Length: 372
Ligand SMILES: Cc1cc2nc3c(=O)[nH]c(=O)nc-3n(C[C@H](O)[C@H](O)[C@H](O)COP(=O)(O)OP(=O)(O)OC[C@H]3O[C@@H](n4cnc5c(N)ncnc54)[C@H](O)[C@@H]3O)c2cc1C
Image (cartoon, rainbow, N blue to C red; front, side):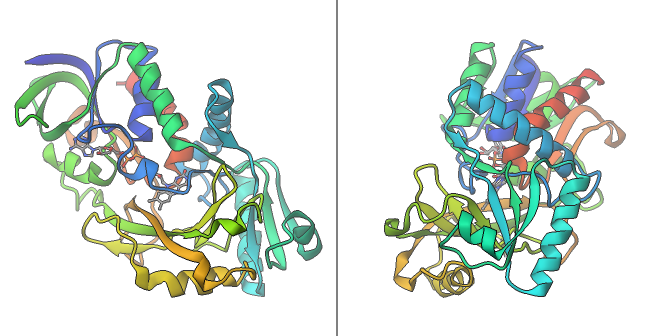
């Protein structure tokens, strides 16, 4: 039986950021990932946007960790040559109601201490982005895009260099609380079953974080840890339009999503998405029947677009704590002592903006770890 001090479950952006951060202060860390490499679930299936942090409610973990994570990510990307660009972003409005909405986001951003936010009007919008149609906009100069794969590669390589043992093709299938340690039961891709004994377990399993919690007997309904999968599809836009926008362009958000926006890539090409559909299975196919809806939403603010410009692209799935129609929920990041599981650091409902926030989430986990 193997012995570790800390076992981290999940090599997405969050698990890898935690592994890298803890490896600076601790040895004997094992990171377990069921896929054959990192980032195969949500961390490579997203808009790769470094969010500013203005959408999230006052005092929430999402607000604090997004604002801190934004600053930290730009620092990490610059210091380690990870491709990124502080493009800036416009959240646009074309009706009075939408204008009120973006003003509320502006005020929330001020409360959340998001730097460099400004309300602008049609003339200035035209001078910044001549190809879009918008009467008003909230300009967030701290928003940007990055290469999420390269970010994760940096975390992975640094963690490995600091002695973290990363085991790909290792799926956690059971967890047991013993006297003062945990037993982690792992199914390896060679078919073997292995057990690891550890003092601390960190659950960064994304879409399956509720199932990992349930392995320890935590009642996911009573604790409100059930994760709802919300699919987001993208449509690629013909490359003849590449370079037509230099900033991220977002409509006003809905309660489940930030809306079908321009997902700007580092090479200047772009896609539209994501939509938001509650699903019961993991399936990354993009439904061609949704083309019309993408086109009509985006045509509102991208008048140059033709239907024939759109082709199905990629999809990702959000790990949301709110059921359809329920109010937005915050990240759960906590030591589960009060559920009789001390040393089980649980991360549940780690949806957007967790890519932006991953380095700040890792600091939060380090604080919890130091206070165990
Ligand atoms: C469509 C979409 C767009 C988004 N856009 C943005 C954006 O622009 N900016 C932003 O900040 N955020 C965005 N997000 C959110 C962001 O992508 C996620 O919050 C973030 O990637 C979550 O990272 P994670 O490491 O928690 O999860 P994941 O990347 O899903 O990693 C979890 C890992 O755990 C592993 N795992 C699960 N169960 C087990 C097990 N039993 N044993 C071993 N391993 C296991 C999985 O295989 C997986 O690799 C978006 C999300 C979606 C879906």
